[in-house]
Image (cartoon, rainbow, N blue to C red; front, top):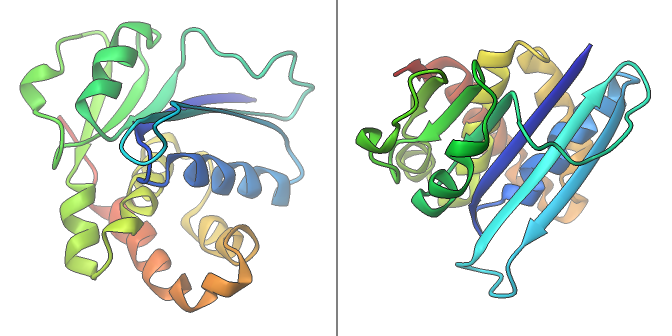
Length: 181
């Protein structure tokens, strides 16, 4: 089994953290994993993305040129990565921030979720990345939702453990609310 994924959005949306949390889930399952971050010099507001590769075999490279899975949280990321996805890829899009009319490839399985709006309704915009992880897990069937909830305890620094309940709520909501576009 090999799973590859690109996660992309603005700096400050928790893109790199989302990748680390997915990687932590894989480690907890005894799988091999690579996490490859990339971000602009601007930090908050600039573009950020990461690639995660998970496998039950050795991983030859953390670089994925044609990802099979991913999530996109803003238009610049869609513009950059939509052409790169492999035909048949599963791609989750935050339709709060990305117009569905921009999803032009008919050989990709697009799924939409209003991650930013959901995070706002939960009380903290910063959990939009957790909504996206929940959606990714639902679509990919990579891990069960309870695996993600358990991994949060280890992936989120202890000083932020007071935010574990809202992060769990965001994961659950993303898992349930994602829809094929």
